[in-house]
Image 1 (cartoon, rainbow, N blue to C red):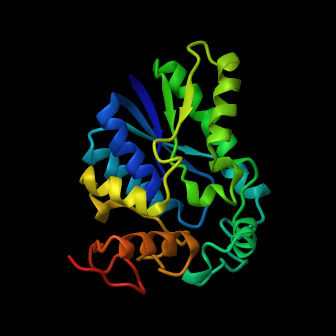
Image 2 (tube, rainbow, N blue to C red):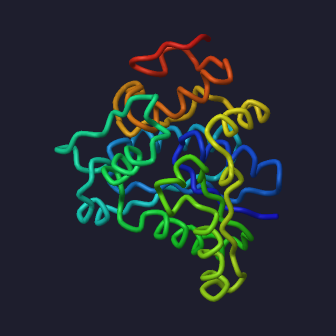
Length: 232
């Protein structure tokens, strides 16, 4: 089965790329630059992952999306939330941090852009890096969203492209475990909201990944985080 992978270079999308390789032929990895803080680091990670798996890669620029987005993921005048690890599963607090980094219709836009390429490349699937943890506060991470997008694409694509996430029903610990089984090169990923030299280790994306690795007693490459040092 032919597929196209939306690849941000982060934990979830990287694991989906690795898994998609086992399920069929990945025709393209697509990365979206919408002016997010970590855009360049995400692009670098995606390029390196695509090279590792020998997959064609393309970057799509959406500068106008940054112009209409006021949240901290794009607007550097606003402070990114830095929740406490013990509060990650508190729905009330997680809802607040999600609102602080929400980008208008981001995943809806991304899967539709990907579907244009998927139809042209005769791909059956658009693969996205969703997960169960963030689906609690991001409705565009849910299996229901993927199903709704698939229903819409039944009418909007000639080959009836489907939207799928291999990690959509998994939490971060399960995603890391799957990545380990697939021997994913962890040193190549970028799962931080910031675009600094090292991952900050403080934003919600970093904290969820750190927690997952620690739960599984798996070390990340040394110095991947500014505030966390794993083993080699």
